[in-house]
Amino acid sequence: MKFKSIEFKDDQLILIDQRKLPDKEENFICKDYKDVEYAIREMVVRGAPAIGSVAAYGVALSAIDKPLEDEFYKRCEFIRQSRPTAVNLFWAVNRMLEVMEVDKEINYHKLKAEADKIYVEDIKTNKKMAQIGNEIIEENSTILTHCNTGALATVAYGTALGVIREAHYTGKNIFVYADETRPRLQGARLTAWELVKEGIPSTLIADNVAATLIRDKKIDVILVGADRIATNGDTANKIGTFMLSALAKVYDVPFYIVAPVTTIDFDIKTGDEIEIEERSALEVLKVRDAQIAPLEMNVYNPAFDVTPHENITGIITDKGIIYPPFNDNIMKIKE
Ligand code: MRU
Image 1 (tube, protein in one colour):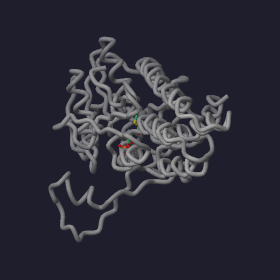
Image 2 (cartoon, helix red, strand yellow; image 1 turned 90 degrees about the horizontal axis):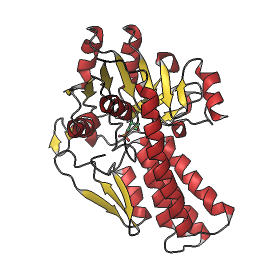
Image 3 (cartoon, helix red, strand yellow; image 1 turned 180 degrees about the vertical axis):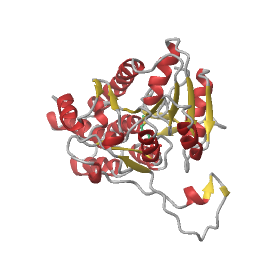
Image 4 (cartoon, protein in one colour; image 1 turned 135 degrees about the horizontal axis):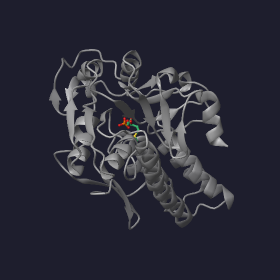
């Protein structure tokens, strides 16, 4: 990898400040759990697996000054409330709390060791997923992707972009179209940044170009990530994913989700149970600091949408590719 999106050193969490990319490559340092909560909420760091890893370090940092148990739980809850949709956040906080509950002790070093484990596992998981996903990528494929699912959205490598990386590293001749992904432009600012750094042949498109490319048979496969997957296969991902899946269905283009098993919420049956985050109107009224609409205008700004399982060809996970019927096959992965 040509950069580290997340690094824990000298009791501090160092993050690439993703709000500033691609024009400025600056770090954001989290010195305590409050900085970690801020970093997740304000999208200094974003992407489901990255949020999970960072939240785990946030829980460890919550213990550094040896707080009383009530205060420690309050801090963990504060981190948990930072964003509502990506299940990796809750998964990571719960896993950290289990460590603490085993020996009923708030031990910073033990918690930090567990966060390190989550960090290392995420890298391994992504590499595994990339290898599994690469099997469905044919030579000379043109791939469409949405949002940023790369090394910035995970500890390293990525999910959907990890599969793309692997295809490129293994010498396949591939071409990528990246949606710019309004309103936060994760595709334009982050995916394009990663694709350029890796030298992967690619083109950036405005989100509304995708339909034309799909209709004109310019896309062989669509690969996207996930923030939460219900046990029937319904998948929450970046706003605009549902629209792509509907087009894929109409024009018969394979549509794959790439996500670790930790993104499956085994406690929910359908996508109706997924809380969709709504973010500030300013994200739509402005592009960064430039105003592009009257500030008095009403705005609807959901950060995610749910792709119904019937639009999904398969879910590429670290434990293999899950195909329909998702209800049965997702539960089998849990066993
Ligand atoms: O709002 P974001 O940028 O956190 O949303 C990110 C996505 O929707 C990604 O596609 C998803 O987290 C998978 S990333 C590996």
